[in-house]
Image (cartoon, rainbow, N blue to C red):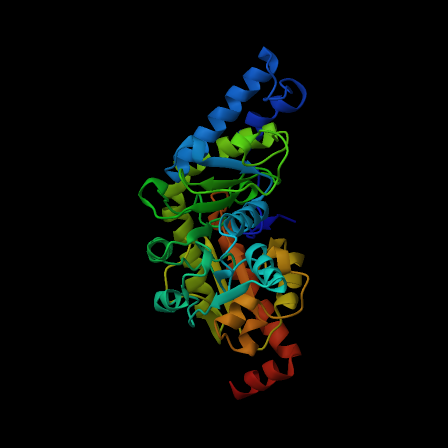
Length: 390
């Protein structure tokens, strides 16, 4: 059975060129980059090169790049830092559709006396910047809003939001884990103070992330100990993965136009064909700007779990939403915040493509999904009623 992998927002294949770049740093060039001797020094040069490559993709300066273990650590570090920098401020602003790495952290902080405002989204999953302006006050320490949603692909007006926040004197952070490598970013022309990204979302291995910290932004480290990362993140560097991250960012910069072209065309063809072949469907976030690789489609009168299981039997890998919450039987918090009807929210599937996706992969989904939906609707009392009425 051929594997058709369309769950790239959960994790991506490590590009073979990325793997080859990192391979020598396990068994051959295994020195500690912090060591004074030549053996460690040659590793430090590769870490510096990786930092420059990440900075190039972001339009940032190399010394603004802090390597971490993952996007979740980067998110937590950003929020915790802002609260330490402004100990007198007790207000945090985020949105109802954030990744659990941000949302859970913020909700946990309410137990410590912090006030958290979760901004609403409209039916397309889009923010209201006027609501953001009204929520800001002199007590706001940080605003953390995702650049693009991991479930729907909806892109927030982050640059405008950052400018609004900076006028109020708060720190602005964005979880850009899904956006980096898919759409152009330029920190040199941005008001963003801190930005998180994760290696395994752009064809680097799991276990490495980055926090961009703009020069001049006050910062307090989450992990303390050694002097690594200019004192901003203690712990011996995960050199092989850092080097892999640098190579992945170099390749992402090279292939970004393809994400906007060929990958988007495949996504759009999948969307057109499925909505034409499957009645009673809706595109979650379809009325606003989305990432070029992401399609969240809701189908009434069926359960997403059943769809995924039957697709998996055909060798097709998709998702019902965030991999970090896939163990829950509750409808997606993102779709609930968007007001997606209950009958649709439970039948929502996310297809997320990459540069390794082929037209044959798309053809397979177009062929296999419609009969699966018919089969599941015949098994559902609501679906049978719909089919009878039809």
